[in-house]
Length: 316
Image (spheres, one colour):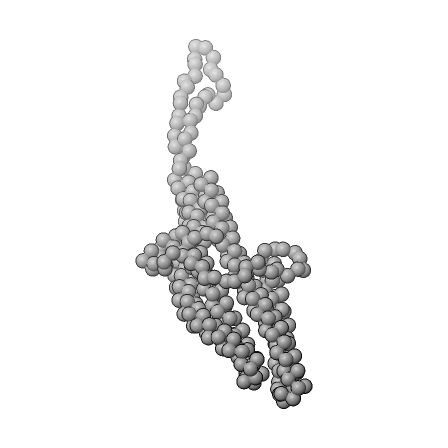
């Protein structure tokens, strides 16, 4: 009975571990969808700006204020943005399909995030303390499942080994072989009691069941040790990703601000006719790339926060 309870507990913890894994995958796919969606929207804005700029240059060319080659370069840049826009739409559909698959939603529609931006989220307060790594390991449902499975095997092993040493208590009341004697003779009744051991010689000599249980115990203990090493690596990887993403956010945030200022100045200079069209398109491309870099950095940071949260033994 105790072994069955341990097996039931092992299944329960394993189910929780699988749930954490599925939710982590869903979170990752959701952030990937957001990045793809925002990138698509940014390219959509750039495409609209490129069309407007191309029309303005065409009017200036017709008025003899610009060369035909400038219009052709502008048209080429606008077409390139439209090409990127089509590719971004495909990527967004792929990310949507991946999330739909994780959520087990059967539809041909495209998921669209209602969020208007991605903000850094601090899921874990402070940083993971390597001094309490053993606690992180023991809090993981995978480890608890292995521990329950180990307890179950050990309980079954005890039943096998201790059971051989438990005797049976036997009570007997022998009587005359051919029935009762006639008068004046009477039976003499006796009450016999004893302990009997039913010991299979094969189990004593070969101990096959015990060896099997011992092997299973060793395998489970080895699996637990290996999992402990995996948890240490998972925590280290998540912490490293968080640190790297924070640096990338700082760099990309600064680049985004600079690219935005450059784009605004290029647009104003274009109105004055003091900048070549391709410079404006280049500024737009730099701005789009800087924004995409920032969104990816924030996305990677948030995903790493969730990964660290689960690696430390928390459930989603």
